[in-house]
Picture (spheres, rainbow, N blue to C red):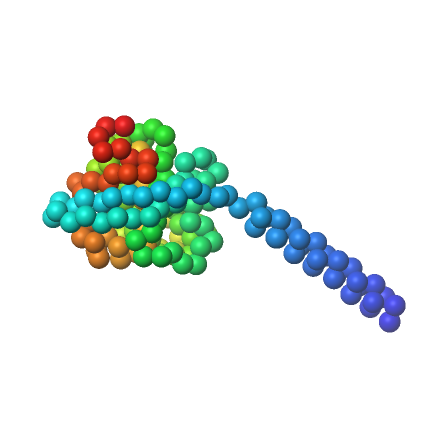
Length: 161
């Protein structure tokens, strides 16, 4: 009986330790500033979006991982600080997403719709870009976003960077 109690006590301590590590890692989550973007479609429509800004490496690494929901017309803007070919994935991301790959001056260059949650498949910008905007899946279709549409605001100026 005493052996059983010792094992039970050790198991409880181990579980408590693991729980404290999990809570500590959640507390260390990265925070994001918010900004506003304006989408100007080639059809002349204007849409305002609220975004979280992923500017620092740790912010870009975490992105929308572990999120279970995102409000409509909200998203995350990844700013890479330079123009380069970008590779994204959906590791630990539970939300299906549309991704807009955006040139330095704010032009949508590549669109990837309905990225599969939790997939580790590489999503390629196909050409050098400075930004990626992640939106809820279906937003591209709902807003009529097309290649060549323009995005301004937050970290994307109206003209060249």
